[in-house]
Structures are given as structure tokens and as C-alpha cells.
Image (cartoon, rainbow, N blue to C red; front, side, top):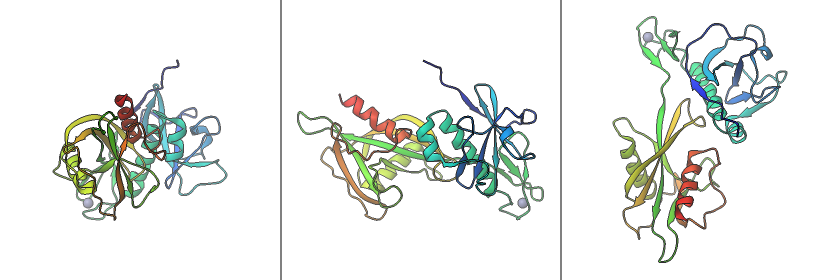
Length: 277
Ligand SMILES: [Zn+2]
């Protein structure tokens, strides 16, 4: 088995971008597909394109660049969702970082306190205001997900709580999820979101893992948890505005419309199925 390439993010510009370095190109929310692989090289780009350091892939430098709009002369453009589904980790994380860094640079150009134009902080994805010294780092938004189980009927496997949202990909059966509020721990966010989205309470919260996510906002990191319903007989109650529907599914009879295989949502669901056998 070929070892997986390793992506290490950093922001230090180690010299000038070389012609044979990878450079991920972003326009809006799309990424440019490479002519000789998943991503383009610096040599494929117009001369003078500004390259921003993303990190290293197996020790090789990787850069990102932005174009004002998808230029049909350069090649095909794909969404992160499509690329992540095809490439898997760690290239999905690399593409996500390119999208996040370039989106952040485009949307954080001026000081939010005094409106002066911000300057780059060398070696960081951060900017500083030359007029009032405000420091503007690229920040991540933490969000939580929870795979909630309850015992099945006598002689049956456990059940998993899944819900359908009223907007976004409404056909998917998803997990309870939401952003962490300021002043809240990850665990407290899970308890609050479970209460808000399905009106249940949970116990036995256990950390599962995390995943950077490029779909919503410039920088989201998802933290996944498993939990057990506090009351075996409690049924979910939804508000009909954000969450359209929520149901308990036996782990041997889950619906087909599940989150994509590259998402931590799906990893949590697959792990629950594995543990039910
Ligand atoms: Zn300022």
C-alpha cells in the first residue's frame, strides 16, 4: 500500500515559488483543476501571479493564488465539495485550506475599527492595521456534530438519531450540528444544539475526532462526538424552521441519503454501524 502523502500547513514564505511547485488557484468558491494532476503548478499560471504559502505536501512547498474570476483559458474549475469527494484526505484538506486562505484574504482587506487598508504580517495568515495597530488573524469557527444513539427494541440493534434540515442539502439525513458560541465549551455546545434542534438531552458524551471543513465560511473546524439519549423512550421534537424532520433509525436500516464519505458526519455514522454488529 502506498503511504498517504502528508500535508503540513504553515504560512512561512520559504523563498520564491518555483515553476515546479504546486499552486492551488481559487476564483470565488471554485478551484482550478491541474492539467497534469489534481492541481496546477506555478508554471501553468500567468507570469507575475502572486503566490501565497499554504504549507508542504510530503515536504514539497505548496502555494495558493487567486484570480478575479474563472478564466476559461486556464482549464476547468471545480467546487471543493466535488474535489473533496474525488481526492479524499489529505488533498481535500489542502484544497480546503487554499479556499479558506484565499477567501479570508479577499474578505479581510480593511480595518474593521478605522477602515484603513490592512497590511500582511510576515510568516502568518494575519493582517495588521498600519493606522491603529489592530491585529486581524485568520480565525477558525469551531462547530460540533453529535451521533446520538439509544437502545433498540428488545432483540434489535441500537438506533441512531438522524435529521433533515429545512435548507441546504435537504435530501440528506444528517447529524445534529451547530457552531460553538463565544463562552461555551465544545461539550456545552453539543448539549445546547441537541436541545435546540431536537428537544432531547444526552449523556455519555465522548470525543470522536475532528475535520477542517471548507464548505461554509472561510475557516470551519468540525469536532465530532458520540452520545447516548438520556431517556430511551424520548422522541425528537423539531421546530420545522431549521430542522424539517428528525427520526430514530435502527443501525441496520439506515436511509440511503447519508452525508458524503469524505465527511466526519459519515465517519461517525459508519463507526456507529460498525459498533452495532
Ligand atoms: Zn485600524
